[in-house]
Length: 302
Image 1 (tube, one colour):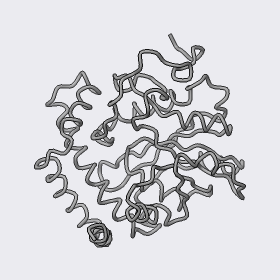
Image 2: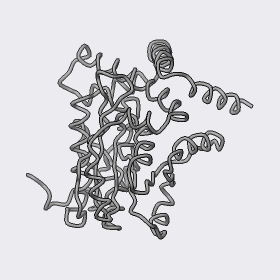
Image 3: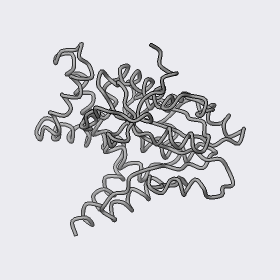
Image 4: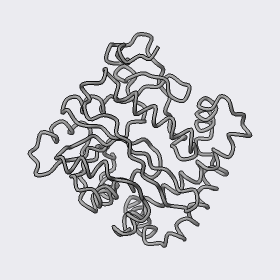
C-alpha cells in the first residue's frame, strides 16, 4: 500500500514543469541538509580529507553547491520519467565524435563514468543519441515495484539494463551492431578485490570491472564527465576522453589509473558536482595487496 502511494507521488512529481521541480528541489535541499542534517558528518569528513589545504570557511561553498546538486539530481531523475528525446538532448550537450568514430569502425567499447552530473540523464541521452547498442551495468533494487519503475525510466529510449553478475553472459550474446557498456566505478568496492591507488589525497579502492572487462573482450575504453553548466540549472556538458583502444598494451590497472586521474582532476575543477554524501572511503587499504590490486611496476612514473 505504501509503495503504491509512493510510486503514485513519483509519477505525479514527474509531470511537474522543470521550474516547479527546481522549486521543489530548493525546499527539499533545505529540509535534508538544514533540518534533517542528512549525512552531514560523512559529507564534511569527505570534504576535509579530500581538500586538506582548505579550511571550513573555504569548504562551505562546496558543501552548499553539493546540497543543491544532490536534490536537483532527485527531481531531475523524476522528470526523466516523462521527458522527451528533445528535452534530454537539449540538457546534455557535447562533442560525441569519439563515439561516432568508434561506431564507424564497428568497434564496441567500455564507457566509464563517475558520479558526476546526472548519470541517469547520460543513460537516456546515450540510448537516444548514440548509434551503438547501449548496455548499462547496474545493481537491482530489492523492492520489485521500485525496480520496475526505475527500469521503465532507464530503458525508455531503448537502453538495456544488466545486473553486474550477469554481464559476462550478456556480452557473449550475438549482436547486430556494436555496443557501449556503461559502468560507473567510483563506488566503494570490496577491499580484498579492489585496485588500490591514491585519490583525492586518500588511499582508495577502485572496482576492477572496467579493467577486467576491457582486457577480457579487448574493448576500447572511453571516460565521460558530466560537467554542470554553471549558468543554466539542469544543463550539463558532456566531455568524452579516450583512455585506450588497446587495453592489453597498458600495464595491469593502467586503464583504471588513467581514468581515476581524469576523474580526480574533474572533481577539483568543479567540486560541488560529485556525490560527497557517499561513504566512498569506508574501507581501509589491506596491509598486503595481491599483484592484481596494484599498478604494474612498468607503469610507475617514479
